[in-house]
Length: 145
Image (cartoon, rainbow, N blue to C red; front, side):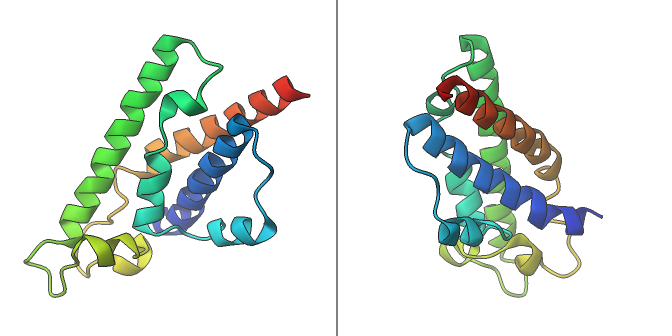
């Protein structure tokens, strides 16, 4: 079940953060081509980049405590992504990946045979983040209108 959910949830998260960032910054909507590019499972590098967007810049409507809590959750997610990079670079693997090849890999494709799912520990927090991101986008759009 998680293998089916991972590509959707990770894409939803990356796309949601991209949309939220544009809405907050007052930029025009993403082009159809960009949305199509973000609609599939992201690479590990794309996920890392999305999670690295500064939380305070995105959550301008929240109180300081909520922003701080969101920042802590984001830092935990980034630490888990770093853990995935480390797993992929494990010299005990038949074909370990350095950071650059790992960054352009999709976790469903880079999953070493016989190991636990690389997205373990990422899926549930990403589901929560994706849902919150949608709510934040809606808030900012209502505020504009």
